[in-house]
Image (tube, rainbow, N blue to C red; front, top):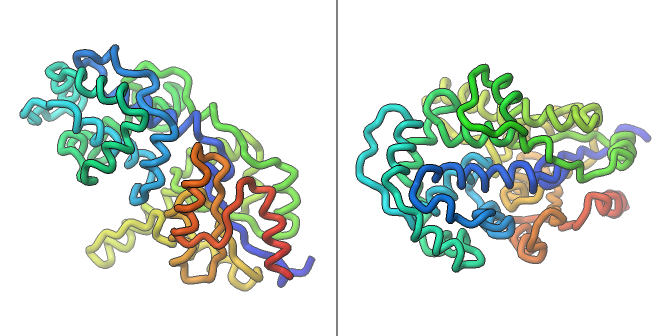
Length: 336
């Protein structure tokens, strides 16, 4: 096939290539639960804390660049049902969380979670999106330098051994087996083989580089994607621009930065550009990219497919598909 007939097809990872319902999504739930450990009535909290469908409502509400921010936001929502003591002065985040929780009673939160089928959705609609000051204090900076919520998240997601190898520090929690190993491939290797033989494939993901490489190598599909942009690339460019201009701007989705960089790299080699994602922010990025993109929303991982379909369409999706195998028909129709 000659070069002019090739398309550039960029994939998001989570919910598109990788099923993360039992990894990232479950890590959010477990991190939120672990955050309240040590408080009165902790053992009475429902397990799981909230449903994946309820979590999807928050994820699809937009404005959350990654699952860490989603976790901070969800904990902030849950704290609306908890009376916190006034003191926030302990310099060490781990001691501060332990001290505050030891003076908290979760009875009200427990009753609320058990009496509402969609507690996050209820809290989301009743409250503004302002982050709790307590959460902000414990989610500043990074792992090892004050962000204990992110550290809990990473320890649960990566597991003790991979966490300690990645961050070169001892784990604080007792999670041995990382949920990253619960991820499943959502696309058949044969389909990727067929696509890559006719088109150029790439990935634009909000994952850190190491967390993108791990499953791609585990499932032996890294070679299908000659270009992979991750959170690391966004952060590097953000720092560069901030140094030059004195202003910091987030380049994570819905910003089209990653799509622009990839499209520019293959501009003279492809006929059309496609971006496949499972969130409204993905479609907004496709719409706002400098190059013309066909935005394709995928709804297969969603517990409420019709709702997600409506949200993706409202965000500018040109097509909405249930499974990646439907992509072949779209490519044929675009070539017609």
